[in-house]
Image (cartoon, rainbow, N blue to C red):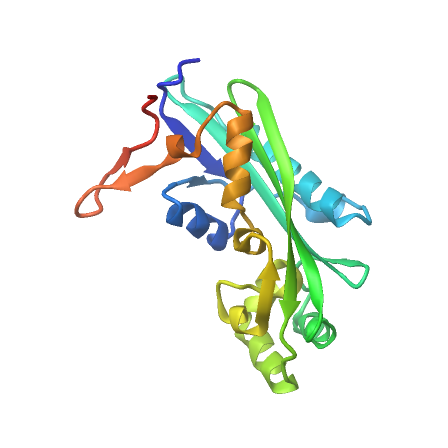
Length: 222
């Protein structure tokens, strides 16, 4: 397979935050939602759970692709969970669940784990790993919890919080890569690409003046 082939990255996730992370890093992905039933994986290890779900998402999308011969297609699957107080926390079941979580989490800390599975479709190669970041939550009031849950944001994300939205005000600090908390670690993606003999610069694109077209930047080898 020629290194000069243009690269296509397919994001196996409906998460707008993951897509925005890629776009901010100069990568314009295609998006294809996996539809994986996350309840099928049962384990008491957070790292194992998020990585297995990332694998399943990438594999589910892979089976629906028909790669073209004039491009090299990659699929990235991701999944995130919060390990807190001996439990694995994904998305809250409902507003009451989100409220109870925040009442427990405020003033304390947890570890956000994000599994990443990157597949080179034609070559049949895979690279995968988990990124983990410690999150220290602010000691927020009952009124703040009520307002935050009412916003709807906590219901859509693992652990019932974000750092790139309204929830950012309720996180005192983190220890690790912020992208892990958002759901996709760019430094880890760079390392996974290297395992597949690729560079992250191979995926960079540039929007032309007027925003009408996208031109590959990074797949010129020196």
